[in-house]
Length: 219
Ligand code: ADP
Ligand code: 5GP
Image (spheres, helix red, strand yellow):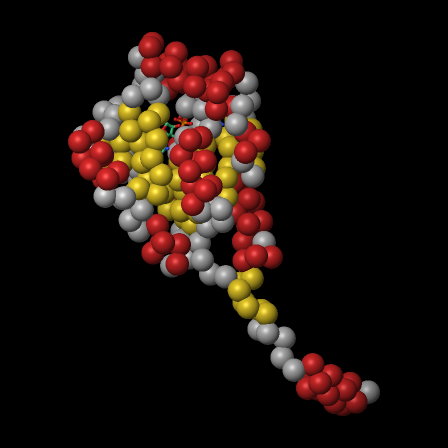
């Protein structure tokens, strides 16, 4: 038997705010039942329609800092100048061992930390087709103030410079095409040689004997 490793894949998705990460990840998890999103903790306030426990766990700075002390995060970072964001450790190994792929939608600093702890993770960078389009998508979302838009746009330039540290890049122009690429990356990763857990081909002599018997029967 040749047996593939049945562990899920830890997938890190980064890219500048407004490039379409959430839209794409949401579509991906809707399209396959073997993939889930990790829900991060954050100290920022909910915006728009966001729900606690669904989009993020919205917690206080005190609670976040206590959880850092208690070693509850796979990674955490301060994003957009002053807010904590972190990936809880809880459930990650359990879900992976059940064969679920887990998406971490996190910033470049968080991705670097995950790379140190989990080199088996797959790193995907989502790129906007142009900065003009990024600006229009960010503004079109209508969820940020003018100051927040400027902050996110500044961060975008820094983040895009880090793209070469990732394994894959998807230029998110046509959404369906991007989704196809995400699915293709997952399929490719499943076929990696290092995901083969066991190769047992049986006894060579016996196999050849069987082959000769079969051949004689048919000829
Ligand atoms: P992020 O999670 O990276 O901050 P969002 O997923 O919130 O970005 O997307 C920002 C805006 O761009 C949203 O209004 C979304 O509907 C839109 N969007 C995302 N992907 C595309 C795409 N491929 N083409 C056009 N608009 C898109
Ligand atoms: P937003 O406030 O727009 O939801 O997210 C801002 C940024 O924080 C995005 O780049 C997002 O990927 C990142 N982010 C969200 N959750 C986490 C997390 O758990 N850890 C880290 N390091 N970054 C995160």
